[in-house]
Length: 213
Image (cartoon, rainbow, N blue to C red; front, side):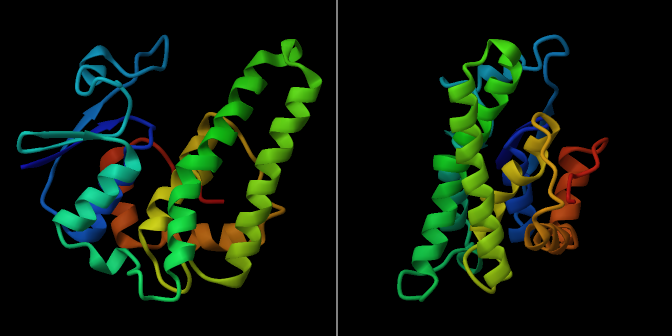
């Protein structure tokens, strides 16, 4: 039995959403963050040696890392409609955005978060460098979504599932105004209208309003 171990307000929402898009049978186990530290509780950290979300168990398998879990579920449970095959013209774009999410965008935004928490103790040059990097990322995203409806092209894929968290839920930790990104806001509206996304967020975050604007 596939079990998605979901840490509240975390990247593991991606996996709940993927399961809903694929129509997979799964058990959802939800874990609340420590109210003082806002970190994962000890029983969540015990699931995997690295101790971070997301984590799934599938029979005897324990697997972490968003990208690895998404690829595993697509390969093992028949998610070809959400992937792009190597012979398709959108293949390189699919690969880029799928890996950009956690390879570049998330580290950039997490760095912004740490710099913001340093406040006046932060080196001004470091602040400018970090802000410039995330600004470039959002400019790229806006440009891409002004050209196509979804990150890989004109159809929804797993690249959208992995890209969404830093554009929405992460903003509960690091506020970012999106008024200057009309194409991104239109994209978020398209995603928010997806029944599978709505089901996933009701299950994963029943008390939270997704930041889709």
